Amino acid sequence: MPLFDTHCHLQDPRIATQLNTLLQHAAAADVQLMLCCATSESDWNIVLDIARQYPATVIPALGIHPWYATDRSPVWHDRLRTLLANPATAVGEIGLDHAISPRSDADQDALFLAQLDLAAEFRRPVSLHCRQAWGSLIEHLQKARRLPPAIVIHSYSGPPEIIPRLLPFNVFFSFSGSLTQPHHHRAHATVPAVPSARLLLETDAPDIDPNPVPDPEGIRPFGPPNEPANARAVAHRIAELRQSSFNEIAQLTWNNARRIFVLTSHDHPDKELE
Ligand SMILES: [Zn+2]
Image (cartoon, rainbow, N blue to C red; front, side):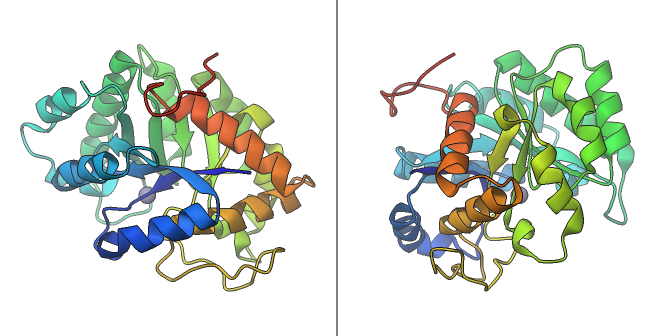
């Protein structure tokens, strides 16, 4: 049963030199597709090169992470607009982070709204980072004059109560290996609260250290650093929390992720479009 890692950073210097090995591990774990998210203008071309190198496996997402909001160049918007002409490119990692210090909300807000609007204009899905900014996120989504076709909140850490408030804005919820940490109680309550059609999984590799506890198949996670093959352990944990089976979760999240992120039928002739 194939898996789709909807958020990783293969361009990160901690793993970029071992991509062949990592992608072999991923193939052996049946992690067949992954979204590789850029974080700043300096890695956009690296992400595109990796996607070109592994066209059947890696889907690129381009954007500026809120941590780098104040570093953006005067031409970032023109550059992103030009690169989004490639129809297979998603938008990410973008978002809001109120947990960092120092921070500039004015810069984060302006950057987030401009990227959200570009995604809406080009009809591209978004991979979104949100930490301790749930009120602002909902306010921005309410005020947006147009929305992208899908907004995937990566490594979702918000409370279960706001899930219903986010659903009208085409929001999906992706869970990471942080679920495998035994004390992550909020996520344990959140995972079962997500509607099946909005559920996704990811590794956030090379971030989020995999828990060294083997999954039910006896497979010990790779790393640290984390890598996409560990999406298998995440699927097992989600299955446990939703009282479902590994196969059911794999199938569900695979179908959901493909509908969102496989943007051309070119490399994936069996694509089913709604
Ligand atoms: Zn990330």
